[in-house]
Length: 474
Image (cartoon, rainbow, N blue to C red; front, side, top):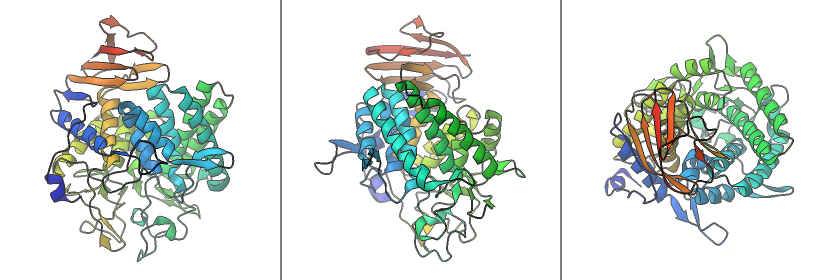
């Protein structure tokens, strides 16, 4: 869909979407409605008899679900708002293997493991124990394949491109060839044996997700997965940390040298998964380069690109990546998360009130960026751009922190929002009207007037019907 198509109409707000507003962020209500509408527009009927009745496609320009899109869209967004569709989409990107179901074994192995993170978050949002056992089996079988084929025993890191960098414009030369010739990263020799920050951070999150699922199932493997997560975090610190700059490099070349570029998704995920201590995470996030319209994929620009011809996966604003920065910043640097929330809203205004896949970082205009010596077209109604915003509102504005056995309200929230209201928030079999007053640490939580502040979970797992949740912050 072109810009003219986008201006032709407004996506309707779905009836199942909560109504969210904040007195200190007047644009939040309309942007949340737009994000929910974008998600609804991308919940589509199955393509044939082998598909589920409905699934979440990657966007108006991408009819398929794709592994990383399915995972990122489910994560604290679709799993909360449309859990049956989220589960169907997560299952849709799996396949049968010799030992049982596992994440689809396509050429982009580096994004398979994020499925495990999303699956565990889905279980938290829904309490679905049948899905829990299924997802745990899929996760351990998928990890076994990746351990056997992609784990480098020397560096103790996982090899492969960055989380969402399937395009060669996201990499320096080498391993990129100049001229590029092909846009697909694996067509460039050596890209299969690099070790990237974001990908290894996701593995830490996935190992901890497997530990959580094992613990919930009473499986004895939980401590082993936690130990492996800690060991990988140490390997990241050893192999990808740039001590001279007090930062982390983007990738480690096969010869052990470190590329010193700054990868926004990698930094956000280091913080989100607790790979680094909170104080270090805060410093990394506050020091992360930001262009006029937001944080960019990789900074600085590679020599073969410039401001006039910005690389598609280089110095460009991808709302999905910006959302990962915001997610990681929620606790250690909440003011950075608030900046991301505002940036995402501003980009929708710049994009004719739509969520686009990518924006020019200096003008804010929708743009596909440059790759293989030409400019790619911008794509509208991109699902993971919308769900990045939904996730940030659910986690950072409302403070929703789901667990298998109940819902807690997080102790941190984005600054400057004023009074927040959210009517019709789905929580399993219940619907919540949420009111948040104040911006500081959690002072009191009331459920239908009853003080539940000291309860292990502020909202029970088995609650049903309509309820009012009042949150006071000091």
